[in-house]
Length: 176
Image 1 (cartoon, helix red, strand yellow):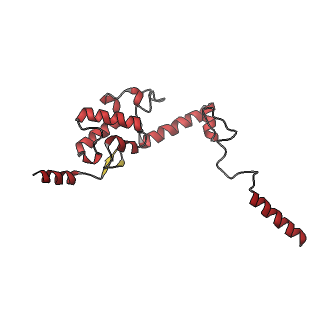
Image 2: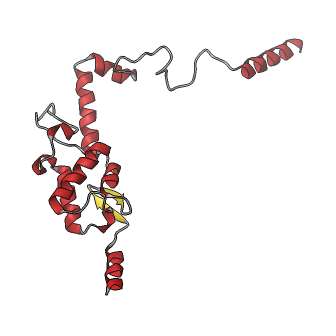
């Protein structure tokens, strides 16, 4: 009878679990698997996994592939509306959103859209930060003498081989 329950568990185990429009590795613990969702880092994933543990009684380090469909839906609802489940406001990534004034946790496409809109707003009002972002320069006071140089080809610098190669060509062309 014990063998049958192990076989049933193997049949129920899912190697790929879909949470918040993202495929997660079923062999990873819940808190580690959640970090693969864009907008959820290590700290937020631990908080969400602890809230999930409090709601269901399933340990936060249980493999995510062992969860059934109901538990996955609960986990997804915790991620999408964390304030409803008692997640503290300081753990969210968009506190006091500029347009709505509400605290929320943006993930995946919503996070990309919100970030893009924030940068557009900073550019529209011609703030220092917005201009530096547009120019591709550091925004928070880092030095630029030795770092943050352009990503294009180097201008005005040649390697020794290139210099010596051009001299040889020019000297041979003069002799002809």
